[in-house]
Image (cartoon, rainbow, N blue to C red; front, side, top):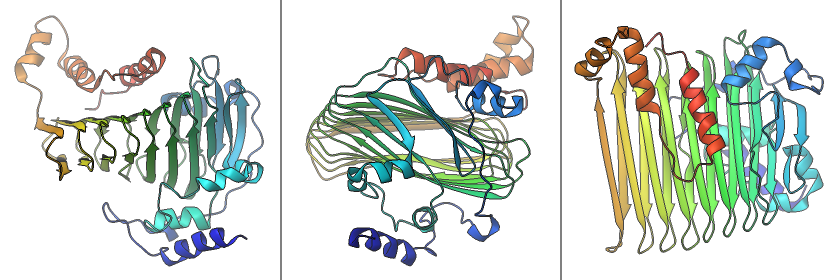
Amino acid sequence: MSRVTEDIKEKARRALEKPASIGPDVDLRRYRDEAGEHPPVEDLSKLPEPQRQRMTKAGIDVTERQRAGSLIVMDHSVVHRRQNIQDLEILDIKQALQSYPDVRDFWWKAVPVDADKFTATAELDLDTGYFIRARAGARSTFPLQACLFIGQDGLAQKVHNLIIAEEGAELHIITGCAVDLNVRTALHVGITEIYVKKGATVTFTMIHNWGENVEVRPRTSIMVEEGGTFISNYVLMEPVQSIQTYPTAYLVGKGAVARFSSVIVGLPGSHIDVGSRVVLQAPETRAEIISRSISAGGHIIARGHLLGEAPRVKAHLECRGLMLRDDGIISAIPELSTRFADVDMSHEAAVGRIAQEEIEYLMARGISKEDAVAIIVRGFLNVKIEGLPAELQADLERVIQTADLSGL
């Protein structure tokens, strides 16, 4: 073991009991670490129907007709990998670490291994993860897709993902997370480090389809170099016990751009603490954070932080919440920080309810009250995202349009 690797593990050991700075704590001892091996799956369309449905609701195309490649994780096993374009690579992270020595140059460079006990346990007890790399100048119409699926009750799944878009590349990724219908409790810990090199673009769409007793702790950081663009879309419309995540993009090169968009529905019993942070460290960088949250009885904390650390930066944060019931909570926490006078930074936040006249307008046209509310909610959640490829925008709209809103 190299000295660098041993130093990383020592930092992780010291942080194994370190709680996260925000969000409810999780007792890691509640969950099993061991999982049986799953056999390879050659054809995703031959998976059992319930698993196919769960993956499809998480944005995974089981036909793979409109995907540049796929990697599917079942519990701790990589059961399927397909790569259709040579310059877009998708691999099991453990295989990548063995095959490419340079991968170690990016390992734990964006996310601190000792940030909290979740990052520490992901290092010391890594199960799997994916490695994605777009070679310099590579482009594809269709996205790569990765699915992190939990099929065993009471299991802890710890993954570490690494994404690199080399200079001038354009990379689209859909990552879907889901559990089987028979999973009552589970824990997912996901570390994701993303590197957007000079002039490259990464579009990262994450769709969560967990269960009502599943705890989720993603830890994500993104480094964007000169002229690079990072676009993030996050969708959560299904029950979950708790999620706490606060991905951070560092704009380290002149003219770099980051955009975060999220649509969240908080159902009864859910505690969702989700935010985005952009640190604008180079001149003439730009950032935008847009969030749409609906509480139908769930507790949602919507955070957003724009930190201007360089002159001539431009950034905007927009946070809107919709309360459907009196027993839910939405807390919007927008934050702007800078010490430079020539920046253009702004935010707006609003929380309210559906206007009665909007419902009555639709009901007057023969639409039931339940359908009227669903139409208004879908319209509220539909976010047009600048720079998002048409194929991904269509996928995103399909997830929102097909979501079951009957219980809201």
